[in-house]
Image (cartoon, rainbow, N blue to C red):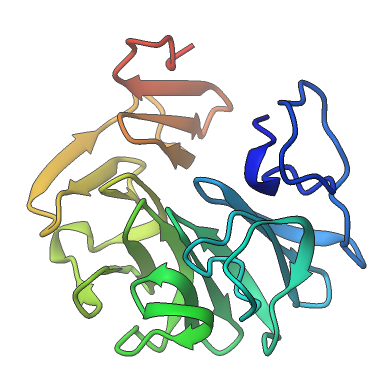
Length: 231
């Protein structure tokens, strides 16, 4: 992928694109979860610690240091027990054991270059997903959204078992296999997708399309196709 701003984590800030996988420098152990933002990335190690690399103009690397890019993975201090991670446009958020949500960068928790508790997040959170400038939180079967405003529940997405986010949209996979998405700053625009004759069991969302895994094992994509994104 694109190599500028240390995005690839391979030791060089300004580097031509790489068309083959390259190892990330500075990771002390194997990872168990990965999040990729617009121009930075973070990994959760098997120990529950977090390391990040890439652009840092908003403090999205979380190390509290100067806001300069890092081409190697840097530890995020003060984090443990991380079970989920997500990254948006200039920010990163994690979910910790016990349900606490912490964010850094230009995040819904406020601007910060170190992990900051997201006040008002539901204490029973089980999953998180970042759009460009918002964070979606799954708590039981309820979906909450946090952005410049405090976290608030989106009643129209109730009944969710999985969530995904991209750009200004938040999507929920319902127990019947349908997918419903809310768009806009107030989540006022609703979209409903039923992928076919078999219910969806997993999905991923982008700004204008969705891809789903169906219960019978088939894979389908739904939405706009100007760039061939539906395959």
